Length: 349
Image (cartoon, rainbow, N blue to C red; front, top):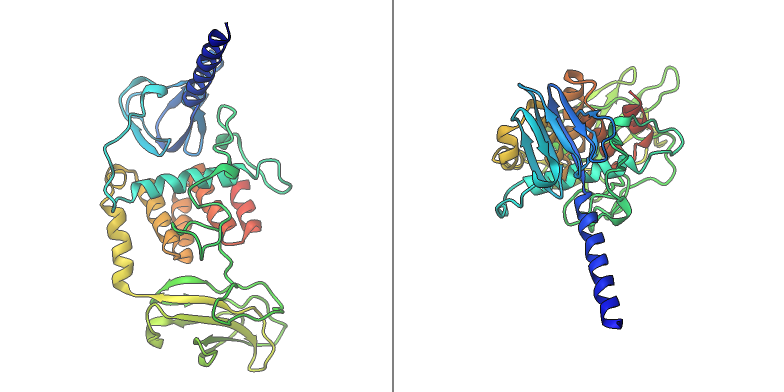
């Protein structure tokens, strides 16, 4: 009898495990045309769009000329054929990815961005549309994330997706009492012209941008008239992949307007290699312009090119202002770099 009970409990546990496996979240990464999600419980179909999270127990109804890129359990699936697709059988285990493939990294990026933003649901100041909730899902549990994207120390993160403290310094940079929030870009920067608007200026005052090297020796200063100026990193001929810092000061005095933040000038060949890796991806090759842009932005963020990533999302959202997946990814980027107020505004649109 005891043996029978143990067998029964084992079978019950196995059935529960299988049922749990069948209820995996499916993220709609991109979509074009008319696509509806049909829940398995017979409830009303849901119109899906980029950013919607649905259950794998249901199915998708795709009209002619429509297509959708889905992500579940780290696997991408493109559905183009007209008719109904059962999601539980759509995600077959793919062939082993090359170590150089960007697709697994992009899968982690999308899943973790959705997890991070969905975890803000109900937090004061955040406005999330139904598109991120889909059929009742909150994407994934960010507290159980194992991919390194969420709230980790970027100095210890192996995949580069962690939360970032732009003012943290391991080499002695940093002012303890800044007057204003920093508006200078940080992380890695391309060797190009960088706009440097002053954080704030009293009337009639000028702002100076200082660049310091590892010994905190001032390498150059640029005076901002009317709170605006640009710094041509190429003209300055700074060393590549060398840590610098910059800050804004009030005029030529000692009063720091902002805390120093670190940056590194990226060599052009390194930038080219980042894009090359992304553009050899199977998902990239068959993706829509928004998918290709998201993948490039993800690669930029992974390489700590935070300004480049944000600028890419800005361009994509100018072209597709209602794309929730773009909004989710941009908002997650902003949260990770410490600008949650700006992220809220992105998701409230």
